[in-house]
Image (cartoon, rainbow, N blue to C red; front, side, top):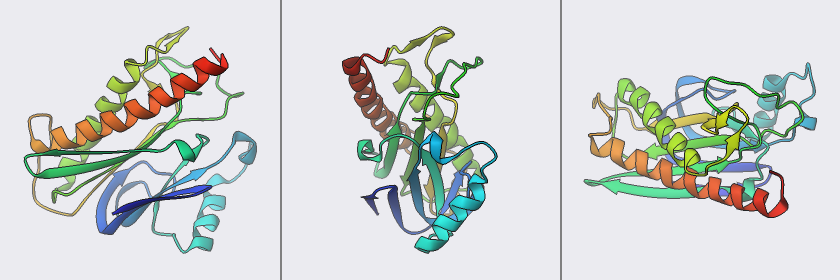
Length: 217
């Protein structure tokens, strides 16, 4: 289990095949994968009518990474964060890239067409074998952790306080197992929630410090 930056790629090696749930562009839903990748892009790289899926599939093929769950972001990949958390012997590792350039308040939309999409991409690996239902529950845990961390940044928009971005993605990875539950009252939920919160909070703080320093808002 390792995290390697080789721009424009960030690689989260899971060590062996895991059950992964995400809404990744390349391999959405429940899949078997041993790698989660980030690809750094700019809006200018993806013009209107550009076939992003075809392009990204070709890029992965050049690397021999066709089986990877792959996330896209314009966030500078140098700013990735890693956080680990353990509860009752269960450990979770979270890797997150955090940008708020296309931030939104839930239930509203702003015109972000002129902004590079410095989105929030979160991947979490947990060392407890889990059933698919538990992975679904963990998506909820990670989404809650992400939103809690972002709200604490107090980044206010015309539509309300930022709760996420318009292109967030979450990937959850665990070995296939029978454990059906992973809520907030379980050690799995505690470990995953803490790791996700810590990684997103750290990344969001870096983002906020930079934009405040540069006077972007």
